[in-house]
Length: 221
Image (cartoon, rainbow, N blue to C red):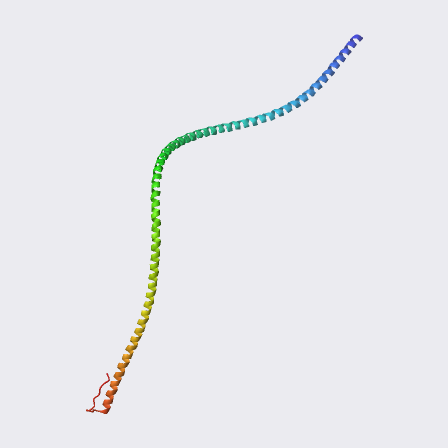
């Protein structure tokens, strides 16, 4: 009996120890569960943050893809434009090259014409030298003629001054002559009037004396 009781007691103690161990394990598990729950919450937050970051990255990538696509289209347009400009400048170069060849041909022609013009210019310079010498001689003759003409003009001016002086003297003499003529005319009129008065006086005196046959009266002529 005691033996069974001891066995039962040991078994109970063993079970209590096992229960205690189980309780400790449960507490440890609960602590681990709390830690795991906290870690899980942190991981959830991290997952949400990563999800948001992923969404932002996806949006940025989509925007970058759209921008890249726009840049690609723009680059293609620029390439097409550059090709068009290249064709344009190639045509311009070909046309310019043709113009250069034409200009060279014209330059060769102009050089020939220039040689002919230089020869003509040399002849013209010779003729110009002769003309300059002739012009110098003509200038000397012109200077002599100018001096002669100036002397003649001075003589004409002196003659004109003398003529003006003579005309003034003639006009003054004419004025004096006209004045003398007017005075002479006045004197003649006075003489005629005096003679008329004398005749009237003689006639009046004869009338006052009466007729006298032996008296001959002569008028003063």
